[in-house]
Image 1 (cartoon, rainbow, N blue to C red):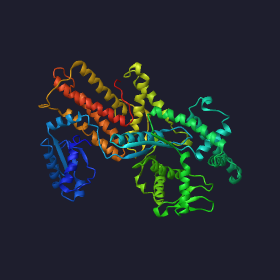
Image 2: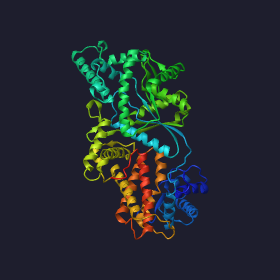
Image 3: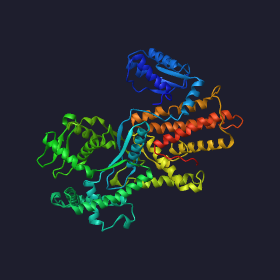
Image 4: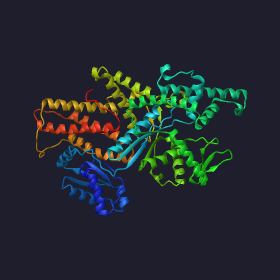
Amino acid sequence: MNDHLQSIEKIVRESIFVLYKIKYCPELDFQYTKKEHIGDITLVLFSLSKKLQKPIEKIGNDIGNYVQNQLKGLIQFSIIRGFLNFIFEDDYYIYLLKEMLNTNFYDLKYTPKKIMVEYSSPNTNKPLHLGHIRNSLIGASIAKILKMVGHEIIRTQIINDRGIHICKSMIAWKKFGKGKTPDSAKMKGDHFVGKYYSLFDKIYCQEIQELSKKKHSKENYNSILNQARELLKKWESGDSEIRNTWRIMNQWVYNGFKDTYKKLGINFDKIEYESDIYKTGKEIVKKGLKKGIFFQKKDGSIWIDLSKEGFDQKLLLRSDQTSVYITQDIGTAVERFKKYNIDQIIYIVGKEQDYHFQVLFHILKRLGYTWVNKLFHLSYEMVYLPSGIMKSREGNVVDADSIILEMSSIAKKNFSKKFIKKEEDKQSYEILGLGALKYFFLKIDPRKKIIFNPEKSIDFKGKTGTYIQYTYSRIRSLELKFFNLCSLLNYHWSNIKFDIHEKNMIKVLQKYPLILKKSAIQLNPSLIANYIYEVSKTFNHLYQNKRLIDPLNVIHSNICMNIIHITGNVLKSGMNLLGIKMLDRI
């Protein structure tokens, strides 16, 4: 990390090592000093006192004196009931501003790791939906944040391109498609295939109802589900006709996914396919059976008993020897560590799969893989509509393409007459619409539920991406106005006095590296999203309370322009980490 930008935090950590010989320090709790107390930044001492087993007053004085000596009187300190308040002198604000003008402001240097981030990973039987959007945005943002702090990142998705769910779409298309294609139906490929997956469900439900009325035996009835199962067995045996149909239909879906990802600005370094890996998982399971790690039931199916770990028995291979999801995940994890020599895998997968990953990690541990502790499941909560949870069978799933189009339409409806310049209309609406969508999803901690209302997510007021984009546009407009009226001057930094609004702006800006660090450690883009809103709100307060461009006081206007320029850069950098584009003019 830069040795200067987070001077107080760095020096506090250094002081704990020097004074108490503690090499590992717990995450320090810094916050703004409460309004009723004098100070600028506060270190909460309670957890430190517990860790160091020393009185709060002594710790506060020891650390405060150490920091004060290191910064040569640029700060003062006071201790109030377990809170160490640091008070910035005027010269310290000048020091901070000069450091933030340094090109190393964003340069956070960690011990680099090679980290694979897996996200999106859809099935090839239907289009991407609102849940996939949250997944993809979280994954893409985390990958950018980790790269920003110096790690080598492999962005990957594994396409669930085989299995019973794929065969359901295939059998429905073979029986009822009549040779139609996405082109002939004038549909996007993923939507076209998804239509037949839904048709399968509809037909199967009808069959169940008919069977219950007629009281036929399900075992003797060749249901559409049994036909799909038969199709899967033929696929796994390498049937050329089935494989050809599978390749054609999957390509329709891939083409559709590619278009959606392009709209969202989502990219991957590697794309893996279950169809290339599932055999590896099967071989590992069969070897595990021979070693007695797994057991086989009378029907030929292979299982693992995880009751000692607090779980149930888990199916690994069906009686017909076809594999299940977890079989493929075993093979995928093993192959990744062999192929890429990675330090960590982060799985971005919804909360409903918590049990799946707990079981997966226990299976890999039983198999003796020592790298299992390098696997991490980032579990995120579900997306809800105002009407409730999305459910495919109830027909209230919002597909990604529809919501992207809707967001652009809302932007056009809300802002066409007031802000956007005509020659840039379409692109600007798309940037504003997508920016609002992405910010709404990423400002909320991944572990919390989202209730998504498109109309409320896009507004120039409130905690929205649009508000931040407009703030950025205002900053760039101010800079242009300044250069038209004034010229940059060489000036001495001595005797410069900042008012309270400028000090608040500098205080907020100097937190950026700390926020980046926390966001990377916690794998939480919402920390950056909420910080960027704080930057925007603080700037707008400055804008409303101070004359930023004063031709009669060009020196101070130059100082203000430095603060403003840094603010714009921080906004653009932070929003880029969220995958959000900015507009220089709105």
